[in-house]
Length: 344
View 1 (cartoon, rainbow, N blue to C red):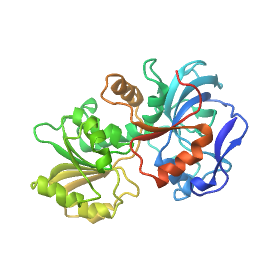
View 2: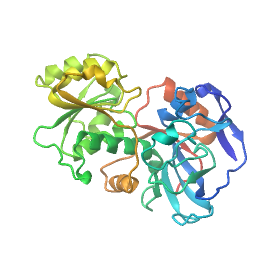
View 3: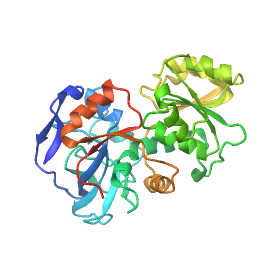
View 4: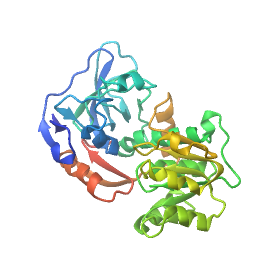
């Protein structure tokens, strides 16, 4: 089968499309014919080696985490999925280091989704059946972005599905990096939860983030985001959701928050919590975590129109190394997608 393979740590330059053996499922595993795979910055972060203590890679290594596809074989002791079923979800690199003891939910360990076939662990909430009316391409872009967005809502205390009370009547959130992959999910979900969203985006992306539901847009390239936000909203905002700024920049950015506000971070690296000692605010970092039913919920949001497709560019599997280079070196709106097999 064809797959996007790396034979050493590095960036997109170490990637190549190669012919490798089709992986076969063992006990508790199942095989999927991949139809589409979404790109994520985390794919390259893992490949860079920065997380090698948490997730040491075995080479040759096949990239890819988000996917949609068809079950083609199940291993022993797998009753949850059957051959022919359409599924979608996210797979993690096979964790053998510290990551193996840190994961709060069972991971969907994978052989890599940027390939014609991949094998996954079946006992995980990070993979679900794909509804017939949800096309494979959109499904393949939902998992990491959507699960991160849900984690942010829970961390902020405004996820109604978690028994939390939505912020209404003046709840205002500033979302940095709103035009990116996670922004394409978190902005509409915040709006659905009753918040007024201020988004940062370049002028070319202004209409895109407004279509997501943003009430106001700040061009972060032409003005200082925090100064401009406070000019427009002198009393500050209730919540700052950071999808773009590195940890140290959040110390300065936190002044945009009113007393008692929430700083919710999903960017890597996360800020040092001690930097906010004495500040009248709550600081939390929330990364992608799958709970039972989360993917079904994201699929339902896509089907009812709360979440729309955010795919901006499509690539064939043979173009996947170029797609990862574009992810690093070009401005990306929404999600980049690799199509592996015809969608249904």
